[in-house]
Structure formats: C-alpha cells, structure tokens
Length: 259
Image 1 (tube, rainbow, N blue to C red):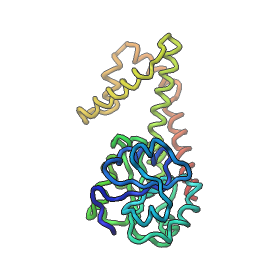
Image 2 (image 1 turned 45 degrees about the vertical axis):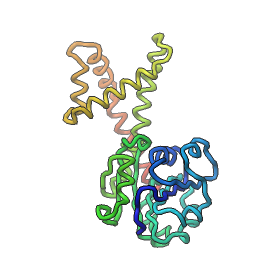
Image 3 (image 1 turned 180 degrees about the vertical axis):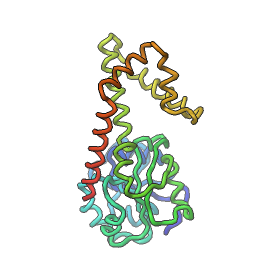
Image 4 (image 1 turned 90 degrees about the vertical axis):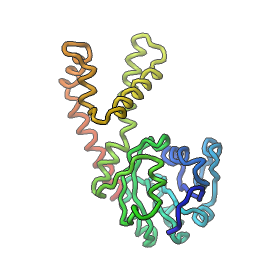
C-alpha cells in the first residue's frame, strides 16, 4: 500500500454533504482531488481540484467513496480497473465490506467506515471495519483528523448508521422544535441561542467526561421546577418508545440498502 504522508494526494469520489464536510476538514493538510458530476464552488474555494476518475485514481494514495448507494454499481465498475495499491475508504451507507471488495475486483486495501457530518470539525465518531492491520500503517492518521475512530463488528454498522450517523439530524430536529416554540413566544431569531445551548452542553461533557447525560438532566431539572414538569409530560407521552421504534425502523432500512 502507498505510504500516506502529509501533503500527499487524497481523492474523493462523490462530493455531496458528507464528502464536502470531509474535504473541508482535510483542506490544507493534503492535495485533494474530487470527482463529481456537479462542481461546487465551495469545494473549489477550499483548494480542491475537480478531476476525471482515471486521473484521480492514478494520483491518489487514498480514495474516499462518498457516493449515494444508487451510484455504487456504476462508479465501482469504472474504478475497479484503475486501482493498484490505493487505500479505499468507503463511507457508503449499507455497502458491506465483502460486497465492496467483490465489486472492486478483489482489491485488498479497503476500510469500511461511517462518520457523521461532524467530520468538518474533527468531532465525529467514526466506525471502522477492515481486515487490514490499521495499527501498522499511517492511513488511520487521516481518519483521526476527521474524528474519534472506533473499530466495531460489521454487523453493528446498521445500528451505528441509524443512531450515530443520523444523530445530527435527530438533535437538529429537537432544536428546530425548540426554535419554533420560541418564535411562537415572540423570540424573533432563537437559533443562535439554541446553538449556544448545544455548545455549552457539549462543553460540560468534555470538561468532565464522567458527566453522563442523566447527570446533566439532574443538574438542570430541579425538584418541583419547570424543567422537571416538562420532562414528566414528555415521558408520560411515551416519547422514548417512539424514538426506539423510529430508530429500529431506520436500522431495518439501513439493512435493506445493503441487500
């Protein structure tokens, strides 16, 4: 496998939301090549260069697959005959490791991974599965720039995708509800304040990692207070069951994408 050093070349096939956020974090660290049918000025402004897939494969030490599942067959058919010893890192939801390897003609250097959009700040959990000894090559250093890497069993990927990969949407969904209610009570632009709440809550956890989510709830929800009253109503309405059913449905959907 090619040596992965600072200022070497990394390719991205697909530059939608996930690809763009990874590019944003890696820009300035590496020469970045991008293959996508649509050129995004934001990506160009980051210093990445759009390239034909053959040129990208020839020049890249690492190639990230950040494409939609419905594009996998078409793209991998083009890519498989262009590979030598590049490392392929797949962020494609639902695409199992062995199926990816088969579609790439038996290519050996593959990591299956799943991050969140937090990669743009380097604060994403990133699930990994591979048969490579990643502790003995410095390719893992690139992923560590994007977030906190965690090796998991491949059978856990559907749950990881549905809980952690979708997590920013779930948290933003609740934040959007808070924003809507605040507007109904006369607050014209509450979103910056809600972002401050998210940042402040994150800081409490990071400043003392022994603080669990339940501990934060107890800190805020005084006995007999307004927070406790709201939480009691939320819990009595069966919100926890709704979330469990919704996420389990998402896990089934993730499994279906891989079939």
